[in-house]
Image 1 (cartoon, rainbow, N blue to C red):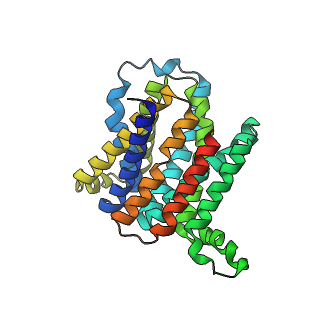
Image 2 (cartoon, rainbow, N blue to C red):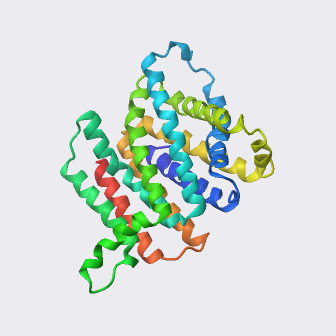
Image 3 (cartoon, rainbow, N blue to C red):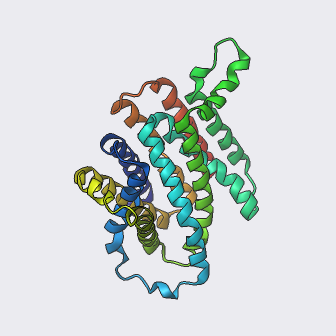
Length: 291
């Protein structure tokens, strides 16, 4: 399968996992959902570690990257789960498009990378899309009200939470490059999620083992979300091996559009006339930034 098909499957799997979480795991806390998204996925992906070289041979630099990445990843997922569980998908998922916008700033600070003219245009499209999604707050004929949609982003709890997720993902995406230099990409995804799964079990399951009983009461939805997330991780790293990461991420961000459509078609969320065009603008901005 070519990298475009893999990336689209990755995007659809991610959006489907989000929709399944919102639909069938509504009564779960953010911590319990993190156990599903990391713990169950780590367990399901363990067979992919067969044949991996001994981890004791990995340099100290690798473990330093991992030590920073894991707590950031868990914090981002806690916010992510709370946002999609309690707030409309069409007002939360589109703000993941800000990840490459934040990456520009993070990469400039940490790596000294500068923004190209296309990248600057992409930032403008992402901002325009964010304005359009919240344009209901602007009043016709009153130019002073044009700033209200941006204020609404801060006022919308789900949007604010997903902006924080996007910012954290910008940091982990940049730092993740360092860790992947020391391990074969075909093993990195499974190994990383196995570590994440072990970490969340130590943090959330070990102090409260009865949490597993709650997960066991919903085996079908829990397993479905786990399988969808595992498919997302697996296709992500298969696609990354075939093409530059920037291009793969740009296609993967079609998950924003899948998420908006899930919100409208499955959860009967309103406002498709502004949210879908806004999501398309943000996606176009991501594509420009990635070029």
